Image 1 (cartoon, rainbow, N blue to C red):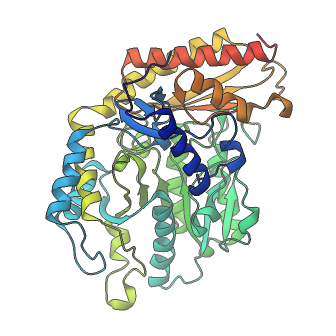
Image 2 (tube, rainbow, N blue to C red):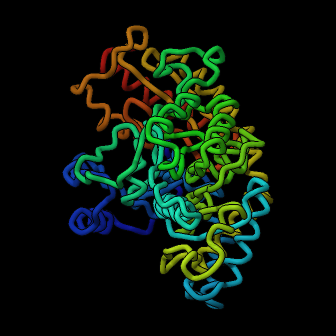
Length: 466
């Protein structure tokens, strides 16, 4: 059960003041304001330590989703706070449109060292959406610079998440995402089925299918005319599509299709990178396949500063050399921010020094086994799957018949509250995202799974499904 980390120093009146002012003035992303005002849903986080968070009322929670798949090195790392102080005193800002800073050079060099061999350049931006947006524009201009001005279309997959800026939203086909208020979006956005081997959209069976889901993408390319396709973007392993890890041949097939038709391949690593899947990058599971672009963010800084990057090959970078007309059109005021770059470099060094990538692989396997054991104890748990410290737990009203939960069951409102009562914060409804910080140990995984066990048991009891 949850326990306070300690006295918050806030009285009941001060806590309520935070809540009242927050409800009045702060716009929480993606949330309905009326929902937050109901049933103690407006949570003000005050501090964190390791895998835990504490709110202004002193209640302790396991950060079951690392914020948003962000916090790799854990909360409360004083050494990262010290990096911020030192770098801010030395140099807080440098114009990224005109010159470099030492932290940006050092970080770009480090990323080239740990990335797949062909990746050698880093273009720094602020967020994962920025990185996806930039990679799409880079791909289009790369073709334009080569005289292929007709290549403007980008292929993405149903079920995948890529961000919320205009170009990123155009290729974003995450489950449950409502794009209608913003349409029409970027012209030339094409979408193909995703990889889901246990519920194949083509009703085929692996390995007899010979990764038909990848091979059939070539049919879309031919129908649209290859000379109009600029890029294919895909997450190596997609959280929004349910953490299905593609078979080894999938990414090899994508690479071959792109090479055959002169298309650039973008691996969206915003969630997968920096150890989340038990490798430095999600694409490392599919070596020797290498993309032309990798978009990274989230775990790059563990959330201690906002930073993201587009990582590219020398071949791509060469397409922007040769005079001012060929320079990449675009930049961001706070891109390559010296403080953020210094924090990211220190964070990557922590991941490396403390072997958090290996810990994610090792403890992630233990987490997966514990979740399978939990599934065997609960009627409503239909599946658990994942890789490293990136898992999904799925529930149905009746897994045997496939019956989904009913609207009157109120899972969207009910499940986060049940988890919170057990000291767990995560995104939850009929599926629960389970992705704790990479510093987690086996005892803490047991605590997390025990809390999930009790929350699901309460749900079954409340709905008469035990």
